[in-house]
Image (cartoon, rainbow, N blue to C red; front, side):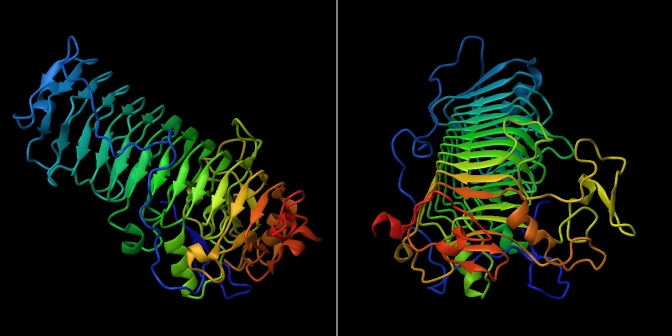
Length: 506
């Protein structure tokens, strides 16, 4: 599982890991943005309109009767691959056994008539499972299934090539939807699910060619798993694991309990563009232990109010921002459409802090502070050198750690009005930093080595941005809080060509 890492006392005794804390201010507790209104025309206001599929069965389709419990599963079983099923208007049910589910065959299509609903009645765990490829689900509402923690309702077994369009997947436990390779999810409503709207996870396999486009992803993590299992790193509007090539565009991701979008562990080659990310309790976007992404032309507003305030009131000073990069960077040795992480032409407005680039000095291969050590080269304790285990592959087989590097932040507009957030301090941070390495005692990264590298040596750069409001900047470690002049001056030399409030005439 992924986890939000923090271990950064400056300097400190070798403390283990704690849940990543967020910066914030000392204002009234539990202030949450009001539920968001629809964004501007043309974006994904999907959930307000129920799926409206074909009113009559297409030629050659098998008709499914809502009055017969289990009719969909039975007809799927008795029909050949590449069959189209048309679900009549009404509420369709499976058999009452909790493991009863539809197991599609390759190339099957499921079309819902207007008002067609597949209802798990809080009894069935899964709606659609199995390993068949190239299954299509359109114009269908799937609701009230009770998948266990870390499991999903639709495409439960992460089969490849599925297409989910104009669907509503809502009020389920676990993840509303899982993902396999080459999956396309578009124009759908992923709403009010207990853990994730979608969990892009395939066990030991990788997912490539994922498209998430034009969806409304709202109100997920209703079961509040981060509180039930502190530090689990197991929630989000959408969570991505080991996805190689993803286009996430034109979605409205809002009012989720926790992060909006979270790419966690060995993701690569993401394009996150033209989305509206707003009013999520945690960060709008987390990109963690992953590589190579373009994040552009997004509107990001009113995120992280709940989590930021919560940790601030505990006295935490870590700048946990609304766009949070943790041990992630550009990596030319990994094939992708870019060899850096580029964040540009976004508008960030009245979020709890801005962008934080973070690298945990104590998180590296074979370190007790890392849960993913089996997925990378191991560090030989006695020598402090890297050695290639049997599972390691080129081009990263000689690497010991993930680096936050080659991040290019430019052409963005950062707006902050503290009165909107009801905040007086600590909600105004932009940051590039690491902790003082302390753990374990044989680590080759003890001291300020990583902090110096992420701040000065790893080609992380802000430039040509516009700032509106009272921004502050954190560099090297949490204790170094800078004003704009210090941020632009020696030795940091950040935000060349950028505009700050006093220089705008205000």
